[in-house]
Length: 176
Image 1: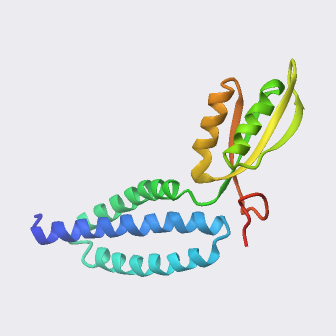
Image 2: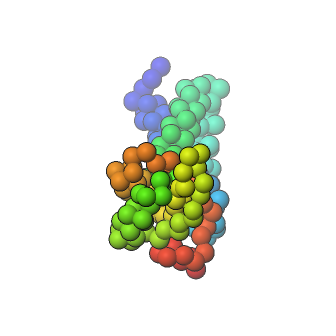
């Protein structure tokens, strides 16, 4: 029988688990990007929350299996929201590569540099012509902006975006 007190407990377990798993997702991403101190701090709060949630969920779980359902639901939703939170935070750096026709490269590079991006250009050989290969390291929050510029100026370009480990040096990306 679902009483008001039970429903509050179930939703409390679920919401707390969503927060805990979201913290876990962000912590894992931070640690893989080399942010050890912030990752450790988040890990402390994550585990403190986990201990409290598990003790609430496990207490009398055989008599009240709905606790397990809400705990699992909180875990699933925590993964979903944690991934969204991490994407919104946009922590870290990405490498953007664009392959464009040589005749479009100079104007595109000039525009990207005017927008404050560092661009390295390498000449490449395409199937039928010489190509400019542009390399940019950008903060993840700026990926869409860079890609939009490239697509608007050179619609037939080939663009790839890859995660980059911590960057040391470079224009606008110096990491201490």
